[in-house]
Image (cartoon, rainbow, N blue to C red; front, side, top):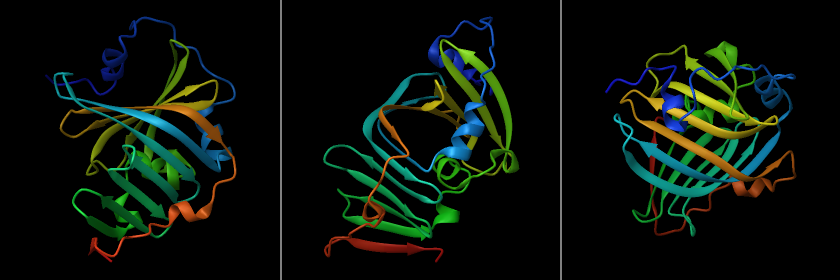
Length: 209
């Protein structure tokens, strides 16, 4: 089943298609990229297949310091850690005892993590469509201008100006939905959490450095 690139999130949330679109003032998208310095939250992630069947569920923690630094952990204790320090991206798989290191600009690129961490003006890299308010959430769709990236569309959902949802449609027509909870914005964050302390027994693989 081919999922329409504009309407797939309505299917996911069961939103009535003819519900009114109400604009928000100030613009939550502009407010996020202009005023957010740090963002931290717990998250729940759901992945749906091409026919909207459930493929995967996971939970974890997301910490962001703009520009360029982030920590994304899956599981408790963490089973996978993704750390960006502004220059390098570290992907640590605990069970495989392996860390893959690559340049951050190549590792993140046109991904939601790269969008949230590095982008100052989304319109430079994305075509932006403001969908308005649906069931209390203000939605924005972003279409990467570089069509060779892993995602054909990214959607951000804001609740009273606070980023609450990130949704992604990839080139395989899979939908990934991330819902943030226990959110803190512009609070002090220890810089050391963006430094990955690699255990001595773990293999380190360096790519494209």
